[in-house]
Image (cartoon, rainbow, N blue to C red):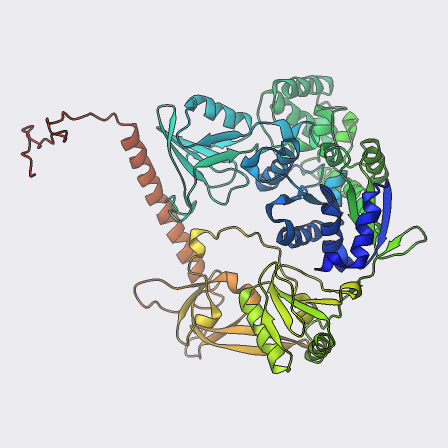
Amino acid sequence: MALTAPTFQQLIDSAAASPAELHLVGPASARLFVASALARLGPLLVVTATGREADDLTAELRGVFGDAVAVFPSWETLPHERLSPGVDTVGARLTVLRRLAHPDDARLGPPLQVVVTAARSLLQPMTPQLGLIEPVTLSVGAEVEFEGVIARLVELAYTRVDMVGRRGEFAVRGGILDVFPPTAEHPVRIEFWGDEVSEMRMFSVADQRSIPEIEVDTLIAVPCRELLLTEEVRQRAAELSARHPATEPAITGSVTDMLAKLAEGIAVDGMEALLPVLRPGEHVLLTDQLAQGTPILLCDPEKIRTRAADLIKTGSEFLEASWSAAAMGTDAPVDVAQFGGSGFAELDDVQAAAAKGGHPWWTLSQLSDESAVELDIRAAPSARGHQHDIDGIFAMLRAHVTTGGYAVVVAPGAGTAHRVVERLAECDTPAAMLESGAAPKLGVVGVLKGPLHDGVIIPGATLVVITETDLTGSRVAAVEGKRLAAKRRNTVDPLALTAGDLVVHDQHGIGRFVEMVERTVGGARREYLVLEYASSKRGGGSDKLYVPMDSLDQLSRYVGGQAPALSRLGGSDWANTKTKARRAVREIAGELVSLYAKRQASPGTRSARTPRGRPRWKTRSGTPRPSTS
């Protein structure tokens, strides 16, 4: 409904003319609507200043385009650090690049309509042709060479271990292959019958037991590193190591040691920092991976430009600090400048490369200029948890719908949405739950469950959108719509709790539910669950813990058979209990997996069959057992 407003029709018409540059003016809360309108013309790359903004916008856009939206995350490390980016981060990046390079490959999802990324990812050079690396793909019933699969996993930088416990690891036991892909919620156990994949199932890392609630028949394992140790890379590392011997250990020893190991095919932490020198002149940018003519939309370009300058400045400052620390005995940083390399690209260079590749450069700013297209959209009022201002917003919504306008309140969860309906009813404002995709009705405030963070006012559509963040000031975390792990099945529903129920807090242990209360802290009114714990002082009364409603993910129901003793707040009893339980579970799981692997590897014997087609079972003495049929 919002995109039918005249301001968005004007926007679509302006963008359809395919200008090389298009400057838009509107509030930050207009990002979702602007990106949604522009994405209807074709694939779009959206750039935000920070990774948090990218995650938030991705969650909002997925409510419109579903799985056709993906975030391209940034490394968590600086270029000179002796640390490699997280395996899950690398897996997510390579999955996006694979989908961009092969839009017709439905195994990873539908063709991407919107890719959201942060300024850091836009400026960071990458290894070329990452999207062309073929992942390991297995499916039930397929025939593949077992040893070939293992060799390919090693090539893709997976680590072989005795028992899988982290992403990027695999284990082999007889004809059983355990693999934990970087992008998977759980590892996958694959059983081979010779070279045929006979069975596949997910299992829990904690106890190594299968998760029957989740069915799986296909495995797609993308690489775990962006810099793979190919023969070409190893030769280049050997050349650089010989050309720059560690004659000055305080300066070059750190890097040359890494190069020597890479030349032998040994992966080391921080090796990705050597990309500019191991693949000189071959690095590419994210804009080079886009389809021809894909527009690039910068949200808040002034902030992005500042962020780009800060990235380069901060990297240099941390590098200088690392050299100062190295002079006192710590490890020297990975300074590729010694070899003619560099870290991030300049934003102007990225824009020039985008123009050369035929990618329009569009911006959405809050600052106006003469050539900009101003959008008829305003930011919604914000109460930030103050009860007086919340009442004022509800009064504004009541007046808006009674005068022929449309109004929607967006809440992140079903429970919160129902509470909003009740609060509106208390303020004599007609409200009703709104199904996803349904248009709001006249005279009624529609309450919708969704991940929207900031509200807007669109005069052209007579539409007002208010979010929970506008009302309470609480920032809703961007969460993926994935199935919860098996250990989360006993999650707590606060509306179903009764006084005396036992619950388990991840950090504080077993407590007893007392009540749900509202408290005003710093002018903001919030709801809390009150849990009772054992006294931390001998002879004293019981302790109480107030758990805010936005921290319910730390609670689960107690499912033990006997009534346990309550835990003590601040003590080490609960941490010791969890440590002992994990150790015992791992020991039992290891024994069970080894036993199961031996059974699978043992050759079976086919029994003789009776004329009626039934197997002839034998007793321990070897004499046939008579049929009971």
